[in-house]
Amino acid sequence: MKKEPPKDSFIVAWGIYGAIGFQLASMVIGGLLLGQWLDRKWGTMPWLTLIGLILGSIGGFYNLIRIATWKEKRK
Image (cartoon, rainbow, N blue to C red; front, side):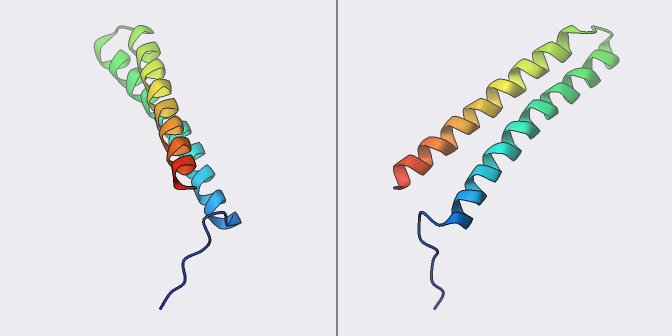
């Protein structure tokens, strides 16, 4: 039978904070790239890039808060 690592384990913390950083960065970069692609396609530079960046940032920070509060509830 496998033992689960303790809830306050260093490895668990690394995993949680790594996921937060990765998701935040990927949402912001994804929104930026999608906005740039749509701007090039429709010729609306820079508006969709800015909207994509803002929406990606909002989504990234939403995930950051969601994961951080989940960790606090888990204690």
